[in-house]
Length: 203
Length: 237
Image (cartoon, rainbow over the protein chains, first blue to last red):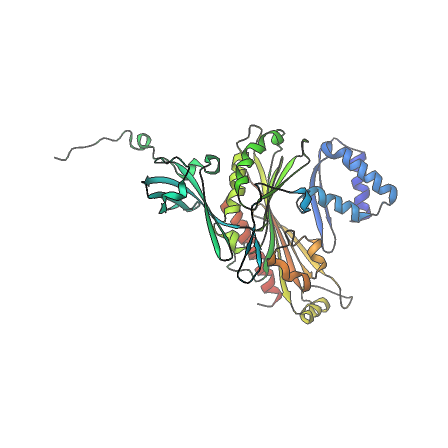
């Protein structure tokens, strides 16, 4: 960042605050930060930071750039373990392979929204949405035991989640309606579609 | 000008996709009930930052899949570190990202989406001798200084109402931290840590009122096309 740019920026901060937005771009040989800042919101933070930095040295651009990067993608790159929480109780994540090595964690490889079309004591047939963009559906049959504990009725929506890790696959059936969009299985609006049409008898 | 590509010559290492929207002042009071439903996925880790402030944000890490999703009052962000081919076809975590965003759009305080942008970071590892040769003589660089330690060129332009920023330069292990190329420390990017080569970074920004999965994939294809175009030109193809 050029010295002149910093001075100009400082003048804007301390001078005309009627402008509520400022676009700031800094570039050096290999890195840059771009940030669009609402001065009215950021004024106090910026003034404190800038004042603090300029008291030390007006040319400590590294700290200034780091601040901008931090603001722009704040919290995105921090991966300190102690700040994270597992979203569900951690069960045994390690498995022992025949060679004695350990693998941690399942990898989610596919999810499918599905609608129940047929069921009996032994099997459940689902209409599965294979490709959301292309609207491709496929009918699949599953063992009824996979749906143990769930109320089965025609038209009910499920979410199938497929996980894998070396030498293992896992399918999970979820019936949480908040995970499935009803738009994935649009209902035929017969009345809308066929209203105004008449049925003609063949002569 | 539309940049279209079949396959990227340089290996894409990380992408960040951001959807910006007008600030939702009530975001912190509304997001938890909708995101909580996704907590039943295996290996999901989460973190809430700036809790109980207007800047409160939630970050969802899918470390096994190589994704970080982040939601805050003015943006939704997706970071992916891994094989780009897995993102270009049907991907469950990408679907989760857009599902959650569609639900955020139904918040009472949501006004509209303003823009989206995609950042692609690609690295091509190569032999040290070839990299050194480029640091000394390069057809795109007027270099009066002899052998360099680092170089980078930046191109910025606007086409079809999209802003493009393309950067190309040499790569060494210092760039891993500088560009945060491996935030999830995946096996996919392990090879970066002891190698040299060349890297490119593409940023595409577009004003839009809707952001969809197909637009997201379209930006990825465009970014790949730009990388290929430049790399081919540099290699004399």
